[in-house]
Amino acid sequence: MSKLVLVRHGQSVWNLQNRFTGWYDVELSENGLLEAKKAGELLIAESTTIDHAYTSYLKRANNTLKIILNNMSLENMDIIRSWEFNERHYGSLTGLNKAEMKEKLGEEQIKIYRRSWDIAPPELSKDNKFNPRSDSVYNNIDSKVIPDTESLKDTYDRVIPYFDFNIKPKIFEGKNIIIVAHGNSLRALCKKLFNISNVKINELEIPTGNPLLINLNPKLKVLSANYLDSSREQNIIMDQ
Image 1 (cartoon, rainbow, N blue to C red):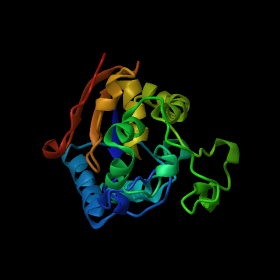
Image 2: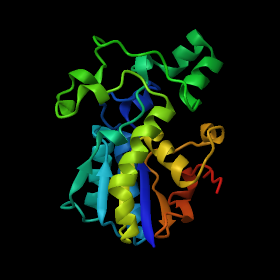
Image 3: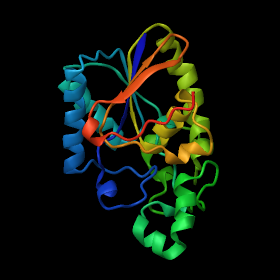
Image 4: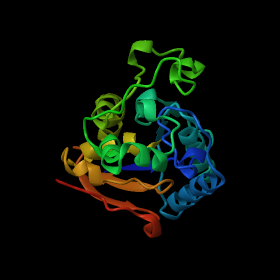
């Protein structure tokens, strides 16, 4: 049996400001730093061991993972960073206030952009100051794979192949894995693991900084799943 720990990064400064963040690289808020620290403490209390650690290219996830590993006295563990675990790209909504856009576009349209399976917001222009193409962290990536907007399906289509190729073999070996990523990249992964339908995936919420501990058998079947902080848990949707 393997343990897979999924953690959405701690609250970011743009989470706090209620802004669409996507691929834009923002820092953790003060509360986010505390959430990351508590996540490590919860894993220690659970006596969880970690063999491999993965995260995205974005510092709010990177720093959350580093804080967790430091608290677990695993600060020397190699961290594998993958752009495939980045947050969903919110296109032209990037940087905008969610409440203001709800007023401008209507609640139903924003709900479609945020929670539909395969509808993406309008593309972010190449010259927009929030466009990740100008960030040197992506210099080693083919520019053709950097999106200008994404639906959840688009996010799924990059997260799952990476997971299947790089992480699934380690689960087959019985290794324990931690992935610290983002609300939508983790929703995409949970869709696969919990066999959630295209319709029901819109109901799945991932809380910040709260480890989701999943026990898997060698065939990747979910044996159990629970949030370690029960006071901030969200409903775990399983269609298995």
